[in-house]
Amino acid sequence: MTLAVGQPVPRALADAEVRDPAGEAHRLAEAWRERDAVVVFVRHFACAGCAEHVAALRPRLAELAALGVGVTIVGNGTPPQLAAFVEREQLADVTCVTDPSLAAYRAAGLVRSAWGTFGPRALAEHVRLGVRGYASGRARGDHLQQGGTLYVTRAGALAYHERQRRVGDRAPVGDVVDVALAQRALAAEAV
Amino acid sequence: MSWALHLANACYVVSYAVKDILWLRFVTLFASVITVIGVWFMPGAPRSLVIWQVVFFAINLVRFVQLVHDRRPVRLPPDARRLAASVFRGLRPRDLLRLLAVGETREHAPGERVIARGEPLDHLAIVIDGTARVELADRRAVELSHGAFIGEIGYLTGKPPAADVVAVTALRVVRWPCAALRAFLASHDDTRTALQLVLGADLAAKLRG
Image (cartoon, rainbow over all chains, first blue to last red; front, side, top):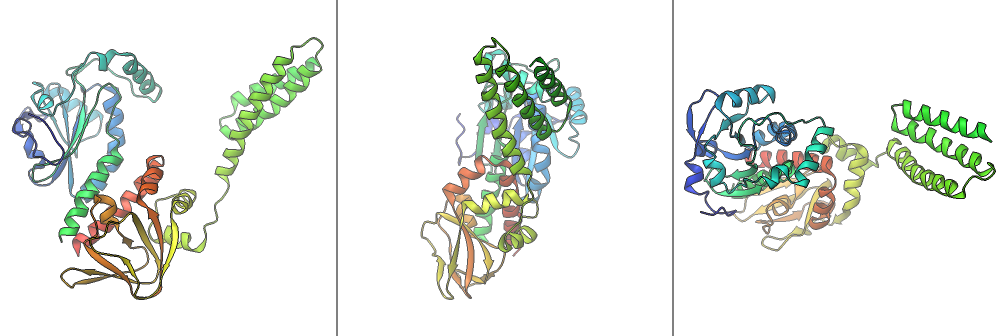
């Protein structure tokens, strides 16, 4: 089961069961059922790097929406921890779900690593994030799990795949918008 | 010359207290000069102190000049002013000038082919003056005028253009080589964001027909 850009996403990823803040179960594939989707996997709900990632993403949400792209954020704590994350990060208008089993993370080929959480570069990232005002709290989810970003087209094909190796890694939002623009360009050309 | 060192340290205190980085550097530059004078005339003072102060002064001076340069008001030439008003509204004037400097202005005579269907395209262009016509394979034609992009689909997807573009009137464009533009945008995040917004709006308009 491998992920390759241009290929359909694996069945295990599409079928992975995630939960919304109310605890209701959904298939992850619902994210790209009606339109292209950027699926952002965060580490855990108190992760400083993830808060920085969300802060970078937030100003571009309207632009992505205008391009016909939805954003789904996936974490791995409990549904109540997800609800608190949604409130804290002001993500009421973004689809946020949680995957406590980590099945979606595994299917997305994401890294789970102690080195990525506590290694020297990760510790340096904690310092950088702290200086920028993003402090990690007690883990709300799996603190060894690293995140990543996927762009899945409405047809279920993978158009972008980024795997974080350590705390503080994140896909440049500009790269994700470039992928969205390229998808729109292909659609415009077809028209 | 101990008074000079006291004066210099007083200046350092002031520099630490000010909030504006330009003033901080200015006061520190002044303090460095006073320090050098004080140390130079102090009997028995090691010359290495002077050398280090000169190094600090030089670094500070370069940054100070850069800051002053960056804060100077920008006067946009007429073409840039039109683009700023019509297309790149979210971009700071200095950033727009830097973006335009990556490209070059090209002129096309009426009837001249600007891009050819199926041929690899290595640049993105924007119309400044004149009109161009996009001739699609199914004989439909779309007119492009000031502020419209030419070759944006190729720039975004890497695919050769699916249409010919021909100058209808005398046409003037700014043309960016794709590789140079990508390299520039990689280190200019705000400009990249602004260009993405503009390209997104352009594509949305094309999708709406």
